Amino acid sequence: MIKRLAYLCLVCSSLFLASCKKDDPTPQGTDDFGGTYLPLKTGNKWSYEGDIKYDVEVTDNTKAFDGVLYKELKQTFASGVASSYYRVIDGAYNIYGTVPAHPSLGYLKQIILKDNVKKADTWTVELTTSIYSKAKYVYEVLGQVGPRTVKGTSYEDVLAVKLYTYGVVIIPGSDPEETLSATQTTYYAKNVGVIEQTSSQQGLNVQLVSKSLK
Image 1 (spheres, rainbow, N blue to C red):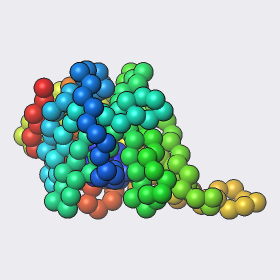
Image 2: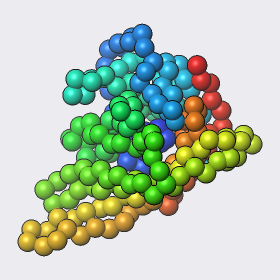
Image 3: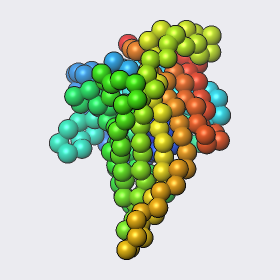
């Protein structure tokens, strides 16, 4: 639910800034797009403050990727509105969004969270941005960290996931060169969603200040 990953966007926040283009609304009559740590019922809303301020809302719009429908999350910032698309499949929290620096690549897929994970579990997503470079995202489960208090509200069941973002330069005839460019920790509360996000990058630290869940 955050601006640069979209929900973290919160968010995967610093990864994606979603396209503002909208498909025709497609009411689904179902709310089974979400998961334990990301409820995606139509009308759910979250408001965040910190380095940036924005609101997130689950709409009744969907978009198909590889024949599967994903739910739209609309993020409203002072500078405008953006969208990304989410669905939990077999316990994996999938997001489709666009990379700001490479809009020609279109929508790209990330997995930002998984159910039934253990502390120190990791998974990696790589996105090729050109023939000479790619982005590498390594997710590490920090485990249960609750209770955690955010803006005066205590959350008991909280799962923390740390994201390591690497820039990879591909040199013909040599081993790829990796550089760690940023880290980001996202805190997910059970049946609530993202409650806080901290980052080594300036401008990406946010906290949940209010919510309205169906």
